[in-house]
Image 1: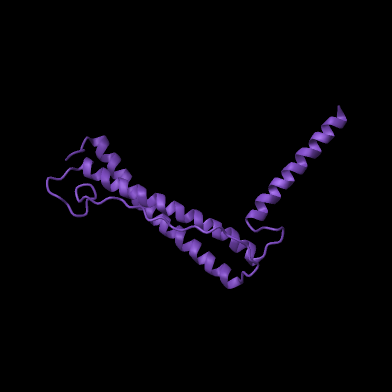
Image 2 (image 1 turned 90 degrees about the vertical axis):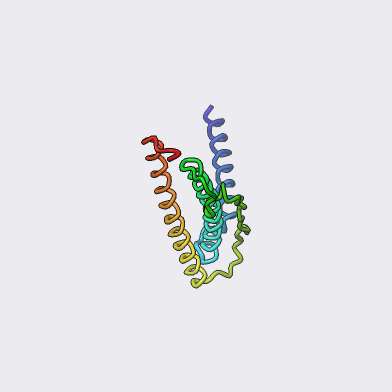
Length: 148
């Protein structure tokens, strides 16, 4: 019984080690942090932030369309996407799988850090705008002021 437990533990440990190694290598981490390995991870993060921004854009468009039905207007309002006939055409970014080419520099790291910081600031501003819109819509719905 003890031998079976040891063999099972050894197999699980080996399997887990291989999986962790595969994931770490995929993101450019070889056990030693280098500018290139960090840039590779940052690039993956930047791609995720790009996708996040696309979803927030779509959410903002839907909230503008909600406004058309929650506060109907009798004339065509040019900025209203529903009565103005505008269709939301998502602008999709091109994502590139990050690769650790070993050529990263500290200047590249600084550039990535600034891009990440600016992206998070833009996301926060967009989320705050969405928060205000959602709060105002909820207040209208609670007060029964829809359609007024």
